[in-house]
Length: 371
Image (cartoon, rainbow, N blue to C red; front, side, top):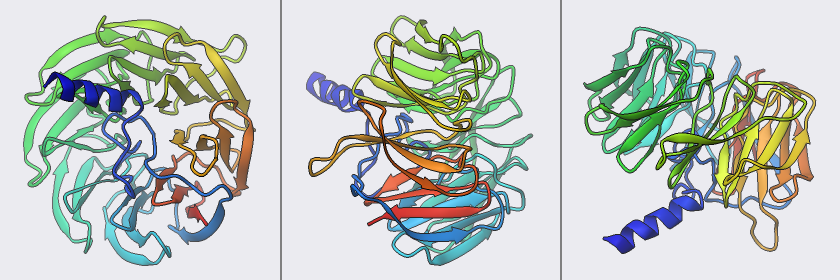
């Protein structure tokens, strides 16, 4: 048992990746590390695009050779990953903002701005069930232990039976739950609009502990063994020790004081976080020391994805900016190695699986890049 635990910890320390060919949820895995299991070609090209008709703030999920994405048009759609051909449309009845689809056991889940959580058959787009919260849902669903975990602006974190939509428990905070819950070891963690980092047991919804962050937080946390990382509206990125139950470092740019809304990616003792200071920052996960920063021409709300190199390539970090560009940076140096001009803001986050990167834009276009 100790060996298995050590192996699990070692896997998570590197940033646990989704299964090959899959990006089943926001940030790729329940720990929200933003690490892809798939490599990408050295020279990306646009292989297809699709028009949703309204802004895409939601990040895509990729599973079983299909792309699932929701939009402000009030639709969840499934497209063929290889071609972009439409497979089905599902009407949510309300706009879908930042809530990003999650796929598990043949079902797609997403929340909408009307406060409803939807479960839809992945193959057909037929409805399975819906669950109504009391306010808008911007949090993305996470599926663990046959439970669906999701936050609502009604101040609750919900656990639903993923098969039936039945309420299992709900945990009340003192402000909106915007964060997507990051989950590991039977505990789920949410950063708070109430300026508190909550640790809640998945089994029964009881709070294990809480850690004051002293800052309004829109970003979701990324987990590694013993640590959590997230940015705040107090212009800082925090490193939180789960063992010590306290904030152990705070990073703040010495001159540019802007919020961090982007959720970080974590790999190999490095944290990558986009800021409304127009920059992507790379930090030492152990100390919070700045390793490099890269300047775009507008704020970076898109959450970065870490893609490991293949065939002699360097590791890269991909993210969008509200300047309308999709960027790829050398993960070690921060040097730009590629970009693509989309023409409209990219606040959604990339999804990477099966050698393809997918990202939506504020003008409703969904782009797929591969070779």
